[in-house]
Structure formats: structure tokens, C-alpha cells
Length: 398
Image (tube, rainbow, N blue to C red; front, side, top):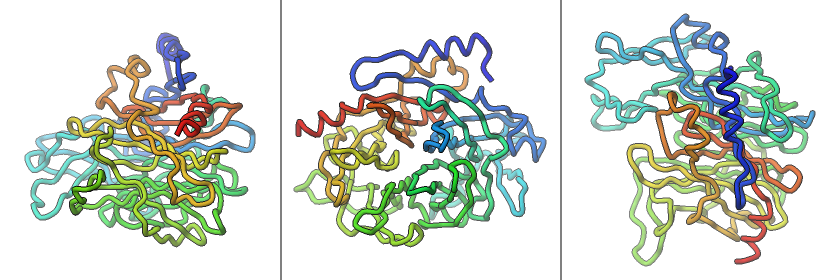
């Protein structure tokens, strides 16, 4: 937990800002996590540390509090030993294994992952940390931690999660809660679905999107009798786009439909690709689950500008037609809603290993404002209050 000095400095960063951002605050970071209750440290006895507590799915519980489902990245404190890089793999029924590989056969330029150089015909990676999920209950305004539910940690439960569970998104549909996650393994890099009756206790239902189709967010209700979701397939092979248009080749946000939340069919029309002359030159993906507004479905998504090893991650928005979500009413990919804010994470300077990354994962309404949950720098959980009228005005001005 925070020392008194750290708490004071952290609270001082919760400043009111002009424009559409009403308040901005880091509510959870690695120094908040009790390592003695972290599963890899507990079950292996290894000396580990928390690389990040970030990219939280968010929903509102029945008691009015907000629930963050936080991705916690736990890593070996001394990963390189005697010329070999050590990393964690989960194995059934419930234990963690330390794998080792000679460092000279690895490319470790990305702090999040490393590449195996002996595979020349395909790109094969490992992860520098292992992610599991931690439910954290916040006050109704999302600015104060009420309880960290260590007893409800979500760890791997199947072989397709052998390298962790990442980037949850939670959508309440009727009385039930559904959480999509990215499950990582040597078998596949898939999207998996969890279900909950109360928003706090989740059951794994299995794989719903196959290899490298991630950033999946569910719409909170059926539209014309059908469930919809935003997805982001990510492959190795793309073809060039026509010179007469402004579309960039590469990953895009796609729209899929389903009769039951388990079986999904892509909508065939091109949906939301990256465009030339914008701040998105590398890739983009869905962020928060769509929010119903009078103007249409508000979709906050991330766009990445090519820069350095990782790129610059920012949050943008689109408004979709309420009855025909394949129709985009407004698309803003030139002026971000959120960017990484160094002033928010200054008190975590000793922990920072990335810059220029904000990754929005949830949004909830609250008395004329929007409460937005994001991961900041793959390190911490950022809660931002936005002026709801900002989006309303932008739609009316189009």
C-alpha cells in the first residue's frame, strides 16, 4: 500500500482540468498490490514483483460501487540468471513452471515481450510477465479504493491460458455480467468469455474468438434481436489498399453479430480501419464497451501512432447509429479524447518502463459525466471524469 507521503503526492495529482476532462487520477498501481497474496509468488516461492496493475475492465455493482477487474502482471525479479532468461508458464491442474532460454537466442528490445530468434519462418514470442485478474471495488465515483478482493483472483483454468489472462472488458447485459478476456498460450491467442450473476464472481465459459482476434467488447443489449460486438483480428499478412482512398492497410476494428454470445459471424462490410492523415498510423482496437447515448452508441477506442518500439497509444471516439451499429455517424481519429499524462504517474517514476500509452477499457455514466477507466503506461489504473456534453456538442456540430 502507499506510504503517507506517496498518498499525499498521489492525491495531489487529482487535479481539475479544463475542457472535457473534469478530473483525472491514478487509483491503483503496483505499490498498492500485496505481493504476499499474489499467486505466482505464493505458489512457487519465487521472488517476484508487480510489473503493472493496469487495463481494467469496469462495471457497476448492485451496491452502486464500481468494480475494476485489473490485469496484474507479475514477473520474476531476477529474470536473467547464468546467461538464461527465465519466464513463467502455467500448467494444469494448478501450478506455475519456470521456463528458461539462452539470452543470446532472444530479442529483448520490447520490455513487454521477447522474440525467439531461432524460429526464422515465423515470429514466436514469450512474455516478460504473467498476467492474472484482480477484482478491485471502488467508490461510486471511481476515485477511492474500497476493497481489493484477493479471494476472488482469476487465474488460468485451461491450457489455452498457459501464458496468462489479459485485458478484460465487462458488459452488463440484462441482469447478468459478461467479461471478455484475451487468453494467451502456445495453442492460440484467443478471446475467452466469463459470466457472472453479481459482477464480482466469474465463471469461465470458454473460447469465443479464435487465434489473434482480441480487443473484443460486447454491446450491452440486443439490437434488432441480435447481439453485437467489436473485434480486432490481428494477422501477419495484409494487402495494400487502393491509391484512390485514404484507408491504411493493417489491423482494423470489425463488427460481429451473434444469436447467443457464443457463436459469432463477422459483419461483411468494412467497418473501422486506420486512415491516412490521422494520428493512427500503426493499429487500432476497441476500448470500452459501447455506451448508449441519445446521439447513438459512444465507442471509445485506442489508436496507435508509430513511434519507437511500442508506439503512442491514445483514446479516440466514434458514434454509431443506435439501430444500425454498422453505420458510423461520427468518427474522431485526429484529436484524442485522452493521451498519456506524465503528471499523473510522476510519483511512480521508479516503476515506469514505457511512455506514451493510455489504453481505455471501460466507461460508466454518473450524473451528467462519464467515468472512464484506462490503463496508463501498462503500469497503473487511471480514472477520468469526462464532461458528457463534450460528445453531444461534437455530434451536433457535424
